[in-house]
Length: 149
Image (cartoon, rainbow, N blue to C red; front, side, top):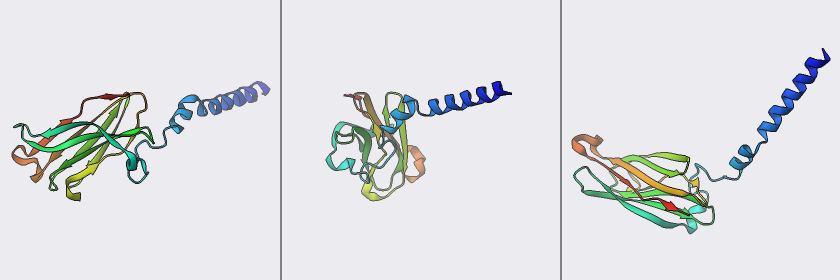
């Protein structure tokens, strides 16, 4: 009976140690992941590091996608400008992770996604838009090149 109690205690201690492992500690070092850059204050000192056109399948430009960087928060996110009648998806990627943000029409055509911590790694952004329900090819996409820091 004492052996079972000891084994249970050792098992519980192992679970506790795993919960405090570096993987969990590392996640705690990324407090801005998946947060709004402007509500957090990270967007106040941000700069554009890459841009690309959002184009239709007929190569017509319908907007711009920008990869943003906050040196203060060590984060990237994606911003777009497009027609105010468009809705769609904004994504930001870094090596091994990504964030997806759905936006609705309005806001004067300016939209942004959430942040990812991206210090000393590569990051890039993309967007897809549609208007009038996407009927008749009324869609567009754009992806920035990678920015590696």
